[in-house]
Each structure stands twice: as structure tokens, then as C-alpha cells.
Amino acid sequence: MADREWFLRFRWCGYFRAVVPTSNDPQRERATLLRFLGRLGQAELNAGNAVPLVERDLAMIARANGEPDVQVFVLPTVLFLKWESGEEYQVDMTHGAYRVASLRFDQIEEVLTIARSARKGELRPTEGLARIDAMWRTPHYYGDVGYVCGYLMTTIGVALMLRPSLKALLITALMAFVCALILVAARRRPSWTVVLPVVVSFLLSAGVALGQRYGLDEPPLTILIPPLITFLPGTVLTVSVIELAYNSIISGASRMVAGFTRLVLLAFGIIGGFNAFDDGRVDQAAQHTERLPYYWPWIGVIVFTLGLHIYQSSKRRSFIFMLITAYVAYSAQTLSGLFINGASTVFFGAALMTIAALVIEFRFQGPPAIVTFLPGFWLLTPGAFGLMSVTGIAAGLDTGGDVLDLLFALSGIATGCLIGAFVYNAVLHPRDAGWWRVQDT
Image (cartoon, rainbow, N blue to C red):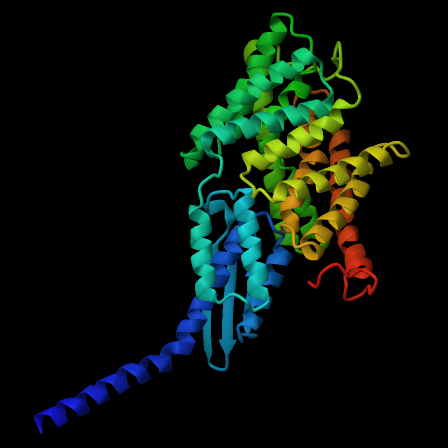
């Protein structure tokens, strides 16, 4: 009798444990889904993805998990998720990219791969959360030594594309080495992020001003811009114009203000450095005494892309695709410059770069397009051009006309990206073009 009574109690307790949690499973799964969407949206914003594309991804993932009533509202610094069905609703809020560390290329690729798998319904929210947590903990593949060497190669690659003299190239490399050491120290001190652009630009410009006092005769901004390449907000400014084109006015305007603020901080540091050791005059009219041969910029593209590959710790398979996209962007801009002048050449570079990146991602299962985009964005130089413009205004050498040219260049890049994506979808996508059949998407 006692055994029978114990058996009945055991069955009842087991039934209770089996049944009661199932009544809470939908709520628990919904909470997990909202948490996954928030973490993934945060990571995508930190990867530099445009707000409309983040909203698209999160909405598609919600539908793939059987929750079509999830509403998504994304800004660069915060995102809101709302689920509502009948009298029930849940709201979740996640801070955006400016509260967490920046992502390297390998991390960006992992984030967008997670998003792509989740959109197709191949990845459950619990698995996605685990992969996102693992992504944040992934160390730099090449360590601090690779970080410094990659930054040095990236700077030398940019300098080669500007064709300086050999002496200016050596000075640029030395300044890049100092800048890389500062960045390594700052990686472990996030509080330095805000003041770092001013401090680094001040130190480097002070060194150039001191060199000019003792006979250095090189264009100062041509020497200064390559070591400051990672501080230039070219990608932020370009994404802001893309968001404005998508009618995301709040996010586009806020990114544009953030980008111009970064340019102002860099210009402030440069002018301060020249004021410390000179009369504050930034001579943009100086000329290189002996420039490198004309073919060195094409070698510079290789050096730049390889350096960025090491510095940003991208996956090994990504390098060749990054190099292809970078050469497409640089070649299109250079060849179009033979027929037209001005900032409009960036339109052709951006359009062909976008087509190449999308073909690599969707037809050859390469890295996400944004990973192969980024080297091309830096090659199209909206950030460097903007720094020259803002510095010229601050130094009293320009009345603001170059800033209008900068905005025209940014619009050209954004329009080129949109046109390139439209051409790919209309002509090269296999759903719309039967002759283009390499691999199913």
C-alpha cells in the first residue's frame, strides 16, 4: 500500500513537472526571441549596417519564428521591439552600438552570417544567443603584434596611393607605428575613445609642425591623413546618406552629425598641434619634391587591403574577396576620372563595388557584402576629403566650398550603392535572370 501511494505521488509530481512548464513555454520562447532580436540588432548596428536593413532582418527573423506581430523600431543608439496580440503585449529595449566595443571584420562576418541563417529559419534564438555571446569573446586572430603590423601596412598602402616622396613615406610609416601603439593601449581603456581622435591628431600634427620648423618640405595633410585612416568617418557619413535615401531621417541625420563631429575633433587636434610648434598655418599648397612612380598606387591597393585584413582580423578566406572588391572600386574610380572630373567619379566606384560585393556574397557564398564593402569605402576617400575640407575651414584656407564637394561625393557613393544593388537584383539575381546560374541563394 505504501509502495502504491508513493508510486501515485511520483506519477502526479512527474505529470505536474511535465505539464506546468508547457503552459509557460510560449511566453518563454517569445521572451527568448525578443532577447535574441535585441542582441542581434545591437550587434548589426555595431557592425555598421544601415538602420533599414537592420529592421528588415529583425522583422524577417520574427516571422520565420512564427511571430509576425513583432514590431521593430531601430535608431543608431537604441532599438525597440514590441509584440502585441489581442490583450497581451511585450516591449523590449536594447541600447545600440555606442555602448559596446567596436567589431572587427571577423566578428562582423559572424554577426551577418547569424542574421542570414536566422532569416531562413535555420537558426533557433537560443542557438543565436550562444553564437552572439561567443562572437563577443573571440580574440584578435593575430594578437597585438598583428594589430600593429596590420595598421602599419594599412597606412603605408594609403600613403602609396597618394604617391608621396620616399622621405614622406618613411615619415608616414613612423607616425603610423606610434599611432598603432597608442591604439593598442586604448583598446583596453574604452574611456579613452572619445578623446583619442583629438589626442592622436594633436600629437601627429605637432610632430609634423616640428619637422617643418627644421626643414621638412612635404604637404602636411598628405603625411597626416594615412596614419589617421581609422579615425576618418567615411563609412559613417556614407551610411548616413544611404539611410536618408531610405527616408530614415532620424538615424541618417544623427549619423551625419556624429561623422562631422569626428571630423571637427580631428581638425581641432591638427590645428592645435600646428599652433603648439608653429604659427598654426596648415600649408595645403606644398608639393612633393620627388613623387613615387605612377604605378605605385596599384601596389598600394594590395598593401592596404592586406594590412586591413590583418589589422581587422578578418577570416583568411575573406582576403581575396576584399582584394577583388577593392580593385573594382579603385579601378572604376580611376578609369572614370579619365573622362570626368571631380567627386562624381566615386559614383562609378561605389556602383561597381556594390555589384561585385553582392555577387561574391550571394552567388559564390563569400563573406557578407559589408565586409568586402569597407575596404572600398576607405579607398573612395570621403573621410579623407572631409578632413581636408574641415581643416581648411578651421585654418582659414577655405570658405566652405569643399564641404559642398564632400556632400556631393557622399551622395555619389550612396547613390552608387543603391544603383548597384538595384542592378544586381534586376539583372544578376537568379530569380530574375535565368542565364545567371552559378549557385542557388
